[in-house]
Image (cartoon, rainbow, N blue to C red; front, side):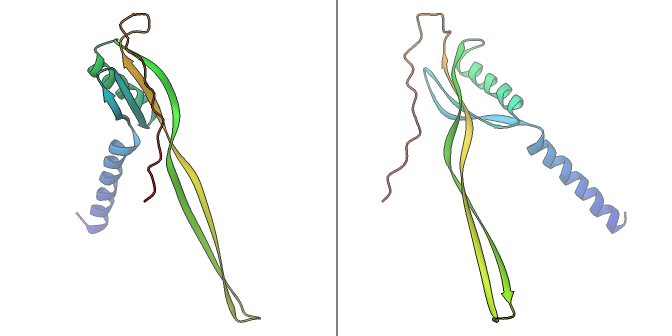
Length: 137
């Protein structure tokens, strides 16, 4: 096998593995879980992540024995990016640099659920918790 063909095959294999690991799926990440229910964050492709969330809720509560209390976008932090452009003005023999800073809010889609069915009298009270900022020291 020549070198160019080897590199081409290697690139194709890397692409396929990347697609399998990142591009074609989604998953549910456990944020909080206790004996009454929990909170899951959906990552990646929403439909696939929801299927994983259903598997996790059924594993925790039993088949068809959970109730989704809420689905919402939750702020989890911020992302700051900066972009700089430089130019040289030959008339004044000066460099000029302009920097643009952008801060955006990062969110994730979360599901809050509890074990049991809404119609039953055996459900424990729901305690929804909002994310809290940590104190600055």
